[in-house]
Length: 192
Image (tube, rainbow, N blue to C red; front, side, top):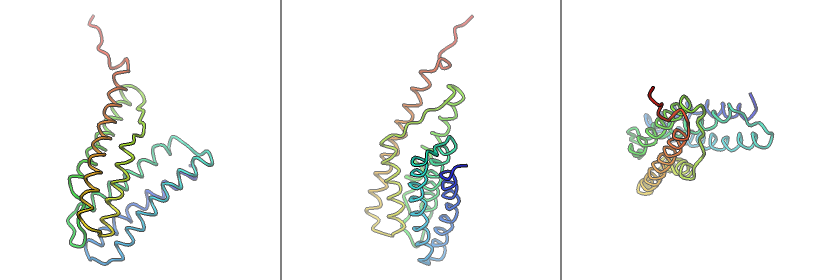
């Protein structure tokens, strides 16, 4: 267990606290819950950069880290989108269609990776520009919502996140189909 992986595990452990604070703010409207949620979200995002820096700087890249790091990112964003799309009396909720599309894309990516793993042997996932932009816009939507800034801008951020989420999902689907097509296991077997 490298230091970078320990930082990633700590990020994952902060996510339930983040969710608890959002739900606390939803229930009682006390601003300190919202500020703790924002601070925790920011801390987890900063620690994402820290664990990446440690892994690169001290040559601590590992297979475990390659799985844990994106898992921590996904858990944070999905948890935030789901809890913020619930009905709130003190916050403008994140549009449910964004949450639905993000969840759908992520479930399809996991299912596709499992299929490729069992069919081809190894799923190769390349980060795509659209996926990175989608992540940034999803984070911006979460932060905008937690700051309680104007809902009209939140809608545009959510729309941008939606478009790039769909685009990245289509790119990952294309990549997966290419991997399956390139595998001899995907070819039809001749009849005997």
